[in-house]
View 1 (cartoon, rainbow, N blue to C red):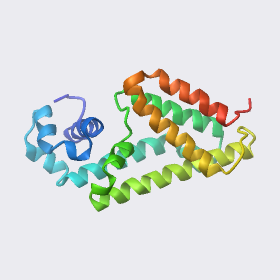
View 2: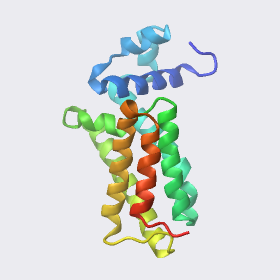
View 3: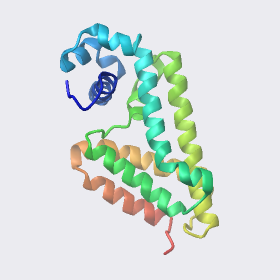
View 4: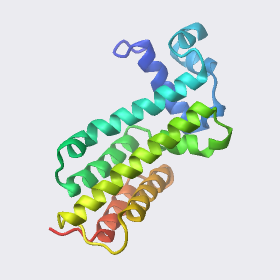
Length: 192
């Protein structure tokens, strides 16, 4: 095991990697413990059930995204900076090997997931859509963006485009995100 990360963090990192490669039902605690060189009991100690591990992964992703957006949510600010931050966050995730967002990975098996994981996934998705809708609304109000229609569908378009681009990175390379980001900026008619 890597000395820099504690066992819990290593378990979560390996679980996130396996989630993106195989989906939620495609890996077991043995896949994690064998890779880390620990006993299965070590994984169960930190996460008694696989549902606990899934909920921890969702919460970690939620906290990571929140830490990047908290200032805007609390104090207002530049919507363009928030959009650029979201695109940069997505790019950084792909550059570290997390091309498929955990929420996207959970959505593949959504109807088969334990109820608590479905609820956490839906809640996180709702929060993300609400945040991005606010970014788009504020951007138009502050005259940073110009577009026709309602803010929520535009936020959904941005989110869907970035989620899709993340998956395409695995096939076409990281430049896909730059191309999609440029098109999203065009969609919003970003005003300099």
